[in-house]
Image (cartoon, rainbow, N blue to C red; front, side, top):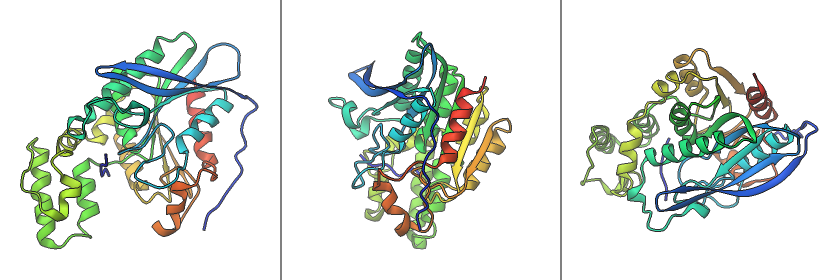
Length: 315
């Protein structure tokens, strides 16, 4: 399943003295089966904070790797490892339809953004009921950040972390991405389709050049996503919020983070110089950055780890 949402500087990552106690598989029962995830626990005594990590759009798994791309970058696995070394537990999971959570009978046409929001909310409530944990925080990456904005409000968690989060609704993102790339007549067709989807109407007559984006099976998902404006969603949050954005991100911009910050003035905004969309320190154009999407040896941007761990630990 695919959905359109929206030189290398390497620094060694200095981690706190805590060790990781290890990982174990965890599950969440949902209608039609179960979702599968990984619980990472730090080697510390007593109760600890826990972070629920949510991956981005399309076939992206619990570790931050996409089946649509060769290789793996392990970005979310590395976030989990960094949290464990900082004395913080985490759960990261394969969302429904992906990896070990490929539920029987689930088709692309059946998926809605609401499914992912409900799943994340259920994970958060399961963590809240676990006596091993103190503060419950959710951290979403890319589309996962949009899901986190809604799920955090529904589950009433202690904090919400938005990593590489879009600051505009999906239709505005698509307009901005496609206008420079489409001829005028095809862009007019794109606008016609977007307006219909925004009204909640599926579109039968999609030009062949736009079918990859607006194929019939993905239209219900797009309609559900178009209902959520990230600025309104983040503005509705009443718990502490951390917005982290890399300056080298080619998919989401610093302006997106600033738009979210303007909608939620109490949120903490951290811009990480040189960090790209997969949370690594890589700059340049797409040809220079693309190898980082498949390189698990590049460390995370240290400033990202510092910002997230400090936020989770805050009283």
